[in-house]
Image (tube, rainbow, N blue to C red; front, side, top):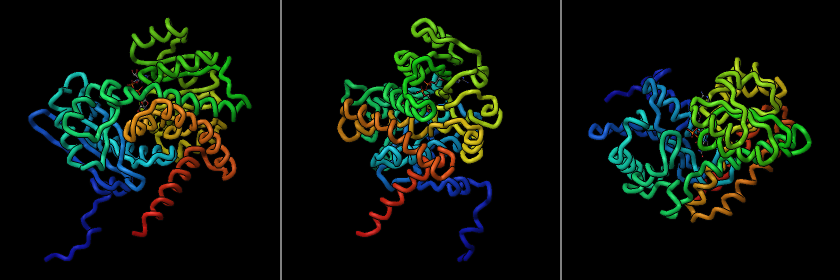
Amino acid sequence: MSTTSIESHQTKDGLFAQVHATNHEQVVFCNDNATGLKAIIAIHNTVLGPGLGGTRMWNYATEAEALTDVLRLSRGMTYKAAISGLNLGGAKAVIIGDANKHKSEALMRKFGRFVENLNGKYITAEDVGTTTKDMEYVNMSTDSVVGLPESMGGGGDPSPVTAYGTYMGMKASAQKAYGSDSLKGKKVAIQGIGKVGMHLVELIKKDGGIVYVSDINEASLKHAAHEYGATVVEGDEIYGLDVDIFAPCALGAILNTETINALKCDIIAGAANNQLASEDEHGTLIHNRGILYAPDFLINAGGLINVYSEYIGYNRENALRDTEKIYDTTLSIYALAADRNIHTQKAATVIAEQRIDAILGVQSTY
Ligand code: NAD
């Protein structure tokens, strides 16, 4: 029998190297030729509870891109649950394919069977490219699913609650930067006015803010302009706008050296997941530019808080009340960052990790 050490089997850029680098517990590849299902479920950390995270359906250019995305997203869910005080771990799933072309009832039900096989270690929900209807199909194969329609006892679409939490984080940021949390007269640029972004437009308008929007969907832009009087801007122009607040609410990794240097805002506070292309490098650059960054996984946690409420017995009022706490947590993260002279994403990460480590300690005895 060979006595080769485990290390000698590892390659620097191999599959396990990525899983090891992100410290994931388990990664499951799901394949079904009949329905065309190709999915990856990544379970990052289950110290605080079962890993909960939505299923994203996206037409990834390569399988490697899908894996990188699911590993980044599931790790983010661990931090989001931890900082929000929820008894949940972090996980996420991606289905490779075009949501408009490749999705079917059979595919979603098959995916549900793979979720069921994890015996409650992973709980799924909707995400970009999936809907509450898809979760109904998943629910035909497993109970490990949240984000179900209200008619089925669920909390419905979590996006309005996500928008509300993001709004709370934005107001706390205004409090820190301007000494008042009112958005009256403040100019806010929102990139992406989908399920979350459009609700955010409404909340900011109600507060007296002046809203600028960009999107690749013409119908959404028309709606925001007609319904809320938002000013439409073209594509990348959104980065260089002379505004008070920039709210990324489309896709992740949009804050890089080029875009950060173009920004003229005082605050970045948006709902998109994993906004920083490189957490430390770009968190530091934002800090050095004197821009206040509201950690994404903290202020976009409203949707997770809402689906967690569904998991323990849905109550909308409780979910909204818990989401409001994002305001105070944001302020405490800013205080810690200032105290230690670290960037705000780092401060939020420190707090999340402290909670996970503390609970791991609790579990160390039988
Ligand atoms: P969505 O798909 O409904 O909206 C995304 C919007 O961004 C769409 O209108 C799309 O056309 C637009 N978009 C795509 N590329 C763009 C680009 N290059 N420039 C401008 N606009 C662009 O998704 P959503 O549910 O509103 O989520 C938005 C973001 O918030 C995502 O990053 C998501 O992961 C994150 N998030 C959502 C929730 C939730 O409850 N829905 C919770 C937490 C985090």
